[in-house]
Length: 226
View (cartoon, rainbow, N blue to C red):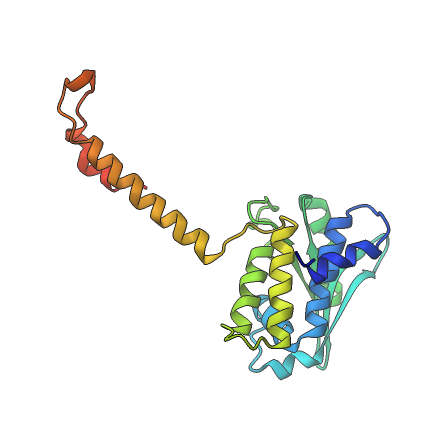
């Protein structure tokens, strides 16, 4: 079985705190630097709404950028003409702390920049009502955006599609996202139909037969139960 290209990069890293989180951030940055299509897709996900992928060429991508006192930004996207700064705080496993958000927002207000939190699905984030300037996206949203950006492939996979496929596979392998292949979704749908069919059949059992109580009275409601 072949090893995922992005997973192989871990073999060349020293053991550091939050290695999985740092590695995932570097992999994402690599995708954005290697593919203008994916960089455009990511910027659109962040709300930039570029009119064409070519506009994404004006944006630089950096990681582990030291700014201010004791601050290190995970992922930075920056445009110089006109000036625009987006700081992405990436989280894998760990929670996003409120004091971290406050410190970043206070500093970015002076820089006229934006803060985006990239977290796993299901992870809690500081209350949006309190931090209206904070944008929150999920790793699975990035994977979906990349998949949509390259479109279906007919066998002759483009470089952009290969990068996107490797990235999505990497996220699944590392359990940063949940596997949501079409077959899994169809399998769930088939299981749901089977459950409803069995529920209907059991509802036909007469009251008192083999000591089993009839469920005919609530059969109609049960049929619609997921």
